[in-house]
Length: 96
Image 1 (tube, rainbow, N blue to C red):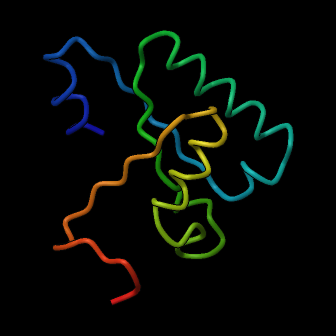
Image 2: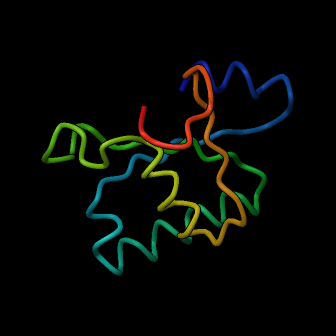
């Protein structure tokens, strides 16, 4: 988080951290609470940095990757687009 703070701070942007598990998407009350927190953060101009809470996840990689988590969050907050950045060379039209 320190890297995000150092990067965004000179731009006058506040960041927050949200650590989620699969349970946050299964439990209706937890889902609605997290949705409200994220939407309110965005309304206040706070950029939420979202990642899987590995400490509380029962499996090592419960979401398999952050791309899947990103897709779930995009749907949760009603996002119009999800942009995934990668350091993998090329664009694949099927599994390489």
